Image 1: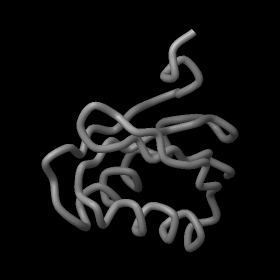
Image 2 (image 1 turned 90 degrees about the vertical axis):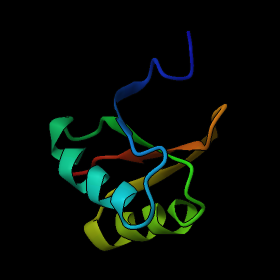
Image 3 (image 1 turned 135 degrees about the horizontal axis):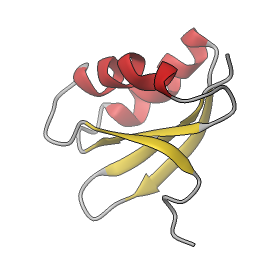
Length: 80
């Protein structure tokens, strides 16, 4: 099993600056069912703060950061 096997979706925001990674996450979070995991791939350091803050404001669970060869995958569990 790879680390991506538990993800329902990934949103690629590599090379995009704040606030684009969070905007892309917001656009795609409803593409996965409640309880599922979605990751936004980003190499902008601001995503490390922005994604957890967005989760708090929108009522989703921030699961954590998974390092990638380029940037990181910021994993979110859709709660509603």
